[in-house]
Length: 339
Image (tube, rainbow, N blue to C red; front, side, top):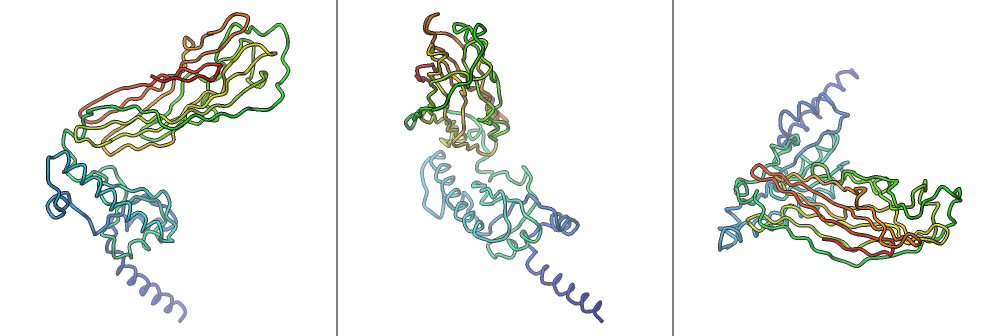
């Protein structure tokens, strides 16, 4: 009798599930049934979807193609952000929620039970497995002008901040330190952005300009910490859309001295405050600190270290490949310049 009741309950639950799971793609549904305890990366599309034509015709947007595109993109972004906010309020174990503004869809990781909860909502049109093919924007945006860069803008924003570091330097053996020979004992090259994702680790991806013979910056004293203002790098396509935006900072310690002599640099690194890359663009970037960029701008008796840090990036689309870089010059006095 108990077995029969379990079967009836299972049939009832299954029937109820089918009622609200029609929006789930059959392939996804089958995989979820086979792996109920596995998280899936899915893409959820909303029913209330504006087409570019509807935006242009019904909302009274008129003008040239570039202006139309810009306004359509903004409306798509606003609408998708509203929908993402709505879905983020659902208590359904959703992780990695990301808006796809040119699709009016969101992607996220979740267990089948959570995906089924989202599928219940009347706002959802369909839920599929996440693939790059499924994230393609409307054909309205798939024009050559979308993939071609018109200009690159690099803008300094914000103010630098400084802090004094208080600590006792570690002892070092006399006679082994050459204060006039300045070297980098940390990293000389590291990945900054890889396939549109930030990969820099500021705790280990660092460079230095210290006296030869020093094993660690802790052997020097007088350090001061500096964080530069932000630098904004923007790529704008022929439609006038900002397709890539990077906001970064430089951090370093300066004014380090050895037994009261010299001004050296350590823990020099770059960090990403904001990164946005639109669909169809691939961005990779590295940071390089060559030995030739470590110099003494002081004297042999009272050295002042200087360092050049090159942030180099490459942008690739199906029709164009561009590279760019920004060079930071920093020194033991705490001065910073970029070009």
